[in-house]
Length: 297
Ligand SMILES: [Zn+2]
Image 1 (spheres, rainbow, N blue to C red):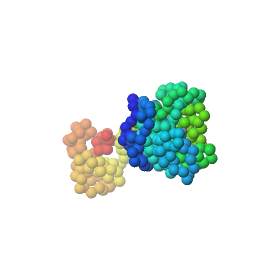
Image 2: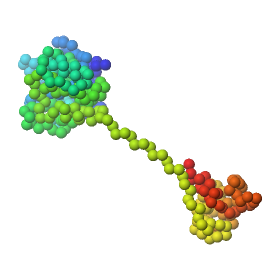
Image 3: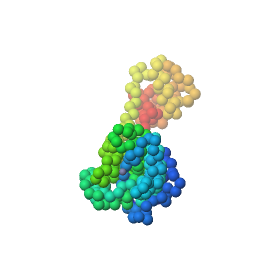
């Protein structure tokens, strides 16, 4: 259900989403599992590193700093959109947060305001630290925002979550401000779009094929007459096998056409003039039937 995925699955999920993923040696087993439980997991938390462009946020998140040992998250998302895996398991990213928020995350409900810090978040959240000064001015690059969207969606996809368990640190722990410079509701919208869980437009109904309507019986079509519509008759007789295919088309309703019409009438006597055994004369009903035979469905 919400058992944490394996490190290999985690990596695969991110790559499947089209992300550029860089692994740091030993990331799969670098964690704080000796300090507390890991799992069940209920959501994805987005952070900002509060570092400038010249600082190596990946190293900091791998190693931590005095007073806060690493790893500080699972993946670091750089300004260029690359995702650097630094740890896997319980990591020091979420700290203590609001139990009502956790309940909303679990139930995929809108978040209440966070006003308590009594619940262990490191146990329950995947965490991404995103390199940014978090001063509201340092611009978030489109590549980085897209990577956040993809990383969050990748994990939601595996767990079958919608976008609502994707939260910002500021929505979890009172006093936190990260991430600043974009809003989490906007990011959740992007994740929802990516997951495709917005209502889809109704599929277009398959058009019913129109019934075949034979062409109108041409005036003046009769044995011995010369008319361009004789060619149409010859074509349909060939298509139905009553006239040899090699017969050249002509405007003339001559003896070959007559013999072919008679063959048709011999096969379908209901279209032959009553009482006749040889009928070279095509009528409107026979004409329509021949066309249906050749071109109808
Ligand atoms: Zn944070």
